[in-house]
Length: 319
Image 1 (cartoon, rainbow, N blue to C red):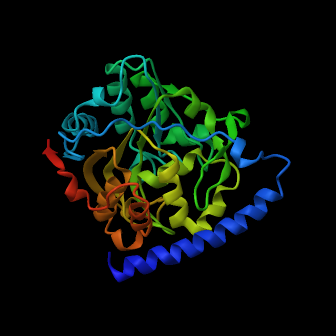
Image 2 (spheres, helix red, strand yellow):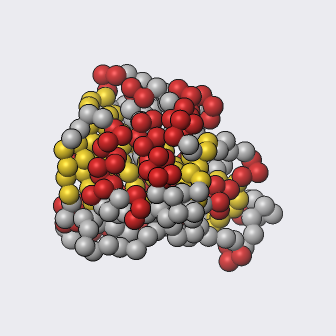
C-alpha cells in the first residue's frame, strides 16, 4: 500500500471518529425516539455466492442500453444467476433529481426497464422499483422517464411514505442507528443497484456505493461532513445482489444535479458486477475522477471489494 493511501486511511479514520462523536450528540438528543442499538434491526444480506468460474466484472459497449444490459449480464452467467423463480427483487435506480435523462443526473430509463424485464424473465414474482429522492418523488420519476419504464416493463413503483421508515443500526463508522426506507428492503430478498455514472462536487464521483444514500431518511445531508467514510459505511451496510452501472451517459461536470447538456458526454457503456468497489473504480476511471474518490481505498481497506477491477478477469463485449 502506498504512503499516500496509508495517510488517507488514517486521516479518514480520525475524521470518522470525530464525525461519529458529533453524530452521537444528535442521536442522544432524540434518545426517546431511538432504542438501544443492540435491540435495533440490521439490514439483510442480499448477496449471492461467488462464482469463480465466471468473470468478476462485465463491460458491454454499444449504442442501445437494453441490449447492453442483457449482454453484460449474460457474461456474468445471466440474470438467472442472481434471480430465482418466486424472488421479490428490489431495484434501486438513481432518481434523486427532477431531471430528464439527457442531463445524466439520473439512471437511464431504458436501463431500468431492461433490468426489470430480465428479472421478470428469470422468474421474479415481483420487481419493486423505488428511491427516496431529494426532489419531489412524482416529478423525479416522471421527468427521468423511470416511472414510465417501470410501468411498461412490469415492475411496481413504490412511493415512499413516513410509515415506510424504520430506525436501523447500520453498524458503520459514521452511520449508526439511522432512519432507513425499510419497507421495500423488508419486502425483498434480492437487491439490485442501478446507479448512473456522474461527477459529484464533494466525493469526486457518485456511483454504486453512493447510490444507497437514497435509502436513508432524515438528516442524511449531515453525511457530507465525512462523505468518504459515509459512502464506505453504505457499502458495508447494503450488501446487494448485483450492481448494474449505467454509464450510457457520463455527467462529467457540475454533478450530482447537472442541468446542461454541455456537461454530458456519451459513455455507451454498461458495467455489471457483484463487487461494488470494482464497479465504482471502473466508473471513476471513465469520469477521470479516480484520484478524488477516496472512498475506494477506504472500502478496499475494509475488505468490501477490489479497486483493481482489471484483476477480476473482466469480460468485455461490444455491440
